[in-house]
Image (cartoon, rainbow over all chains, first blue to last red; front, top):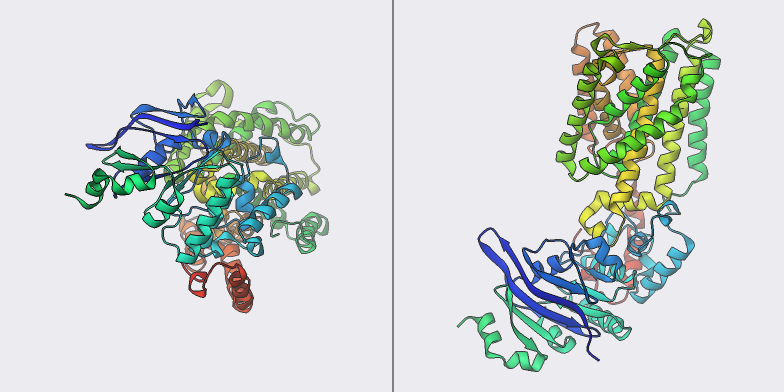
Length: 244
Length: 346
């Protein structure tokens, strides 16, 4: 069964005279780990920002779970099951590690008046921290974490709301090789649990062993789509990356 | 668990308020109660401002508009009679709730901007309110001002009701601050202050918490304004919507430490008496304003984040020296990480 979780249809974004994303169309099927790759400046992060509501598209349509998102807003999308991480591991440094998870768990307006960290919040956070082996750090300010730990924390936090689709923006950039393996393992575990991923990543070895399918973006539009094997043999991809 | 109600915290608050409750009863020089009333007034204003300016990170410079509206509300309602003397106090919750509701659309529009732009937008609120106070002559009396009917209190203890009313306002503002910190409102506000865009991205109800903080903060400030108008007895636009009041409440929170419970109180208890002292020492000249500014500059130079956060940071650093080894051990146990990774980027 192939169900389209996310459909991006003729999306365009211009910054002044530069067309960062040009009539870009692709789909992310449910249950996949889809990669979005391409040379620097090919528009990957811009696409991410439009899909998650951080940037308004000039034209085009985005459909999530079959419904058109006419006014994409990050908080609405998050509550509907689409969450993302940022390239620079954005966490809340003043909050504790545990609070970083609690705040992302999603609560309704009435819970706003309830306790900062309730017992059930703590249980859920502890469980998630256990999975990520961060439980000993729960009560530390997030500012005390290393960069790699912050990346893990940000990833763990967006999982707190049981999302259907997670967009990861360079999850392994700037972290050491051991941490890359850990991150890969966490992605695989969550994928096995039913979460769909769309990943922007520059580590080609990781992309080729983890992702299927792979979408290649160049100058704001997809130039190739297929399995890692197909992509690696595609002359257009080689040309885009190496120049001709 | 830094937001838990600890025994030390309760003792601190208990002693602080007990001393202040006892001051009028014990007595002292004649000027003391008057100065303390204004000090506590600023502590209450600054603590209320801190809800939006400190915890949410939205530095409003227009809060004196709400102070003025509360003052005028009292003056207009009790222009002819104060009905036994306590009616203006009993009316305060109504003023607070009314102004809080009024502030919601204002907050909704102004908080679409951030940081310095927000500060400028809220300054315009101050001047709009002042202009309205001047020009709605039928209601406000225009430049002629408006008086509250004299309070029928005994001369010997005349200041007491106003003093205690201000003290109750301070206690209320601090209790609400404490409640914010211990609830998800405070947790959400902390994310707004740190990184509002990211907060949206993890589903935080950003607009709702900002408006709650703005409305509660404005309502409290208006109630303090109501007490003040009754105390001073006569108000006019430049006096009730005075930029110096806005600047006062903001400076005191900055000085003591924004986003802390005791910071605004500490800032007020330093700056208000200092201002009074300099006004005495330098007479009627404007020199006292320079001395006042100098105190502020010196403290900000040495403790740029405000007194309490700077001290807390120093204590932390000292403690971290001792606990550092233990922490590194804990971090090292988080398995997939060689020692080189542990220390990196801040």
